[in-house]
Amino acid sequence: MTTQAETHEKFMRAALAEARRSANEGNQGVGSVIVRDGQIVAKGRNLENTTQDPTTHAETVAIQNYSKTHGSGDLSGTVMYTTFEPCPMCCGAILTSRTPIVVMGGRPDSGASRFGDYTLERLIELTGWGDRVEVVTGVLVEDCVNVRS
Image (cartoon, rainbow, N blue to C red; front, side, top):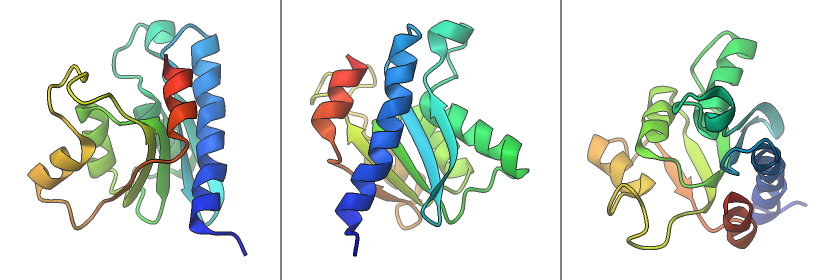
């Protein structure tokens, strides 16, 4: 039987593949996958430099790809895996799309975020949605941080 930790690592590795692809294309190395019922149903990678669009972060691209292929922006019942802590914009997209679980790899060192003391968990709590979104941290952190650099 597969453990939850093994499942998280499996899908984080898929997100890491997207992050590497992003980095190879000259973008910041961040990747994301959306999983439903044990299957990847959408992928995204950072495309900011490629598109010259500051909103094309891995998480928003994955949500857009899901919406296009599934005809809905409602991600209830899914899990989002992302290699680095989602920014405030991406957190908004996660909340709006009703993504119930976010599994993330790396995050900025304390005080190193361009958003001050921001954390995904703090913003979720601030919105009052803390009981609707579960955040899982610490999955393949070193790999996720290294590919982003």
